[in-house]
Length: 333
Image (cartoon, rainbow, N blue to C red; front, side, top):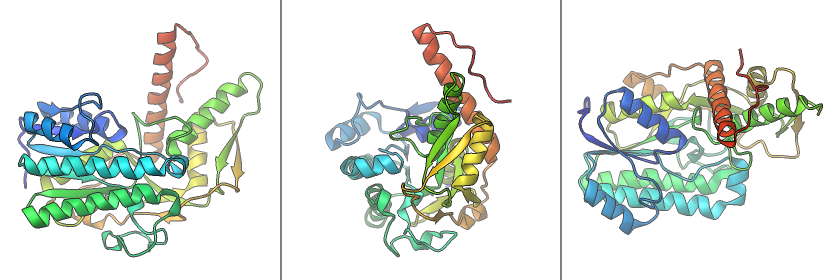
């Protein structure tokens, strides 16, 4: 372990996603000069033959495996086959190809949904596989657990330096704001923004939110996660996975109120208790990571404000492409 040569070849699998794009930004800011990426058209990560050929041709020194099919409760509930198949195949092909081409080190990124629904809070790494999963995302969770065990298996059988990190709920620039497949922060941000725009046309300024707002969640800005991934690549080399988070959570109701204050302060919140809340609480124990010497930098309110500014920039860019001028949408003060 130690500082990675900034001229080493580093492959970011999933570079167009929320985490992958943040990781590329962070690696560039840290002086890496040989960052490898591949679009889905260039290599389908579910295809072992295609992935093996790509690795043989490019032979990366380091691999950040952050690709995957992701989404919120609705997406997990309606597309279970895609979530389990895509994710199992993606980590299967990449990990195996990394082994075949003697990659120096690989970091596999999982998800905190791997833990049991009623895990003791805060959740330590040792609670993996100690109880039933949350039913609303078990397909994704099973695939991610398989990824952790895959890395452990290649370490045990072949001595590979393959590590796994489990981040808490993420948000930030590059997130998915589509209401049918997004996670809670971008979904709420989009809903409050749409309500603000609708209210300007005389419609009620209200936002309906799934559940009761009683569930508690922890959130990590994706730029902090990117920094943690590089930190772990340089300072962590153990058999078990390691949690990545802030160690602080808040209720969905409190989160919705913070997003309302950033995006649309005048909005009225309506709670749809007929919809599921998901896991009652999910707070990671990040003691191991802190003992290694890493902590996040970005406060939630600051992260929400910068994410909304990014979202507005995307909307402005889309309008410019369509030749539409709309000066009514402004960034928060």
